[in-house]
Image 1 (cartoon, one colour):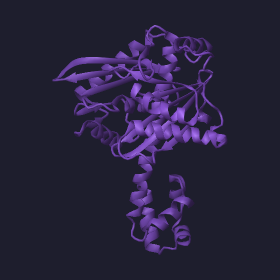
Image 2 (cartoon, one colour):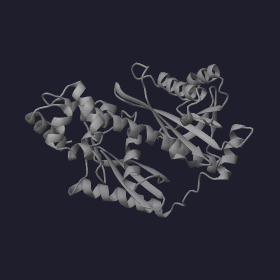
Image 3 (cartoon, rainbow, N blue to C red):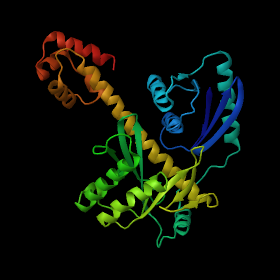
Image 4 (tube, helix red, strand yellow):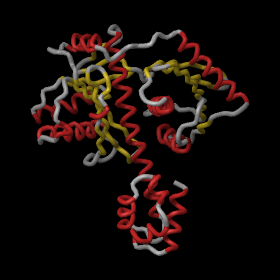
Length: 351
């Protein structure tokens, strides 16, 4: 099993994962990173990111705090590795002792860490020198593709301005044209749609970035570069490469890599960008998955077809609004009988 422990202090989060194999601690992984968002969001998004693309997942994953949806998390793990995985928060016994050991390790690690500054002018100037850019990259866009099996393929775009997240400029893309799990094709689609909208004068995409970063290696860069060339977009383009422990290692062109290990400020900022774009893409993917699951359950109600479902979602687009709807309101708006309204209310109550 994998046993997780977290600790936080202000803007810094520490994480320790104990790898239990054949009843013994076979390995330990340590992570420290800046907190962006609420503590619960940071913890959960990091766990999802850690297991994305992994096949060597054990039969049990022990958490020190429950995910928002433990069943969904277990299903996500199953999709990644191909076998059932038990996701638990232990209340007693040996597993709880191991969980507390992981938490204590995280606390000790946090006590010895110095908080990273990151996203400062010095980091941007360092990045400029490292990449040989003519000017400081003030406005940086980063992209990631996230897949959930054969469905739920999405792209995320985040923006860092002056070294800090500019969340009002973040954008999401549902993959429409690419069939199957094709990361290169999906990345091409996202970048094409983004810059076509720029060329069309869309106010939501009106600014050209100084630097484009892709979550991926040289294959992603080589896939996207012809699209930018075709559209006449001449912006510096690099891929963000991780090591085998999912830590940011280097930036890559279509041919070679530029190591980040000797440039602390640039490394910290690129790591923050890569973590944030991955978090954002996964969050969108999970939102769509939950919405699809919710609509499928509503359609199971006798008397609710595609047309009525569309009217229902337009009138009551969020769970709180759905749960506040009365039987009479449902009957009037959807033109359904009283029994169908009651059945629909019963389903909504379980969402």
